[in-house]
Image (cartoon, rainbow, N blue to C red; front, side, top):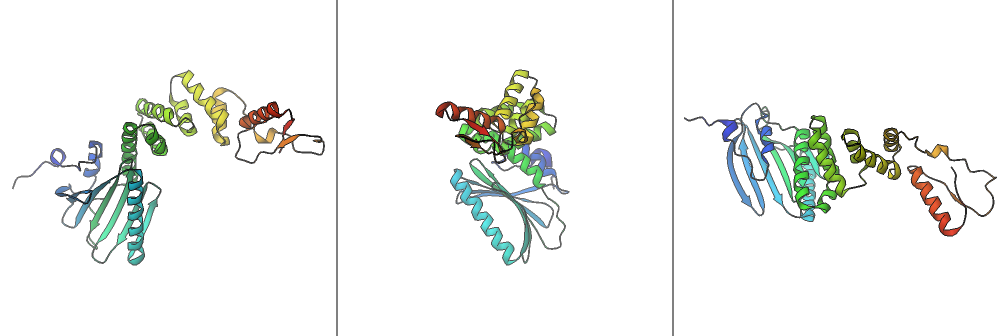
Length: 293
């Protein structure tokens, strides 16, 4: 019998970029490609790991609405399977889920990720009481999915980049944590071009870029527009500015008499922005505007 070299010969699903390849070597046994099929718009690749485990990786293509519908259908079916049998949801967000399902004759681990134009479903099926040989890490797969989301959204354009801004920011953060600062800054620049009010992205860019002018501009955007006091403080610290806070406004008192407009901020609220609103309103109406707490 001829042995095929696993690393060189393993056939990855056609819908997964090559940077997913390390996932397929994470188990104690090499994955063996079994079959590929396409049915009703679903592309499936099957692999085996040892004698007791099968791994199915599927892709459902569609637009944003179709992907959302597909994800909700998967979520509903899993909820029914867990309620009827046994199992647990380990992670659920609007764009991914991780669940374990215990059926009569098989145990399944499912990891599902929504992408800009598809949904990817990983299903690891193991015979009862058999040791799991292949268990992809959810966090690692999520990091790869975020990279794929970024790359696909970048091709699709501004609307898709804005829609996936949270995943793209997380991808940049993963790059920074891995020491890949140059690549992360490119991702952040592309994100901020389409999501200019992503203040966490601005702060990450401010902290890591060597371009002082660009970093200052990002800090000013956060300082003038953000409502989260922690974000405002970080931007103010970078700029060497003592940010205005709600506590610095006078308390409303009986001395505030006469015809005036009193603005009472309710957190979260950016004091800088509030002062601009007060000034603009007073200029338009000639009615004095006070800010009190």
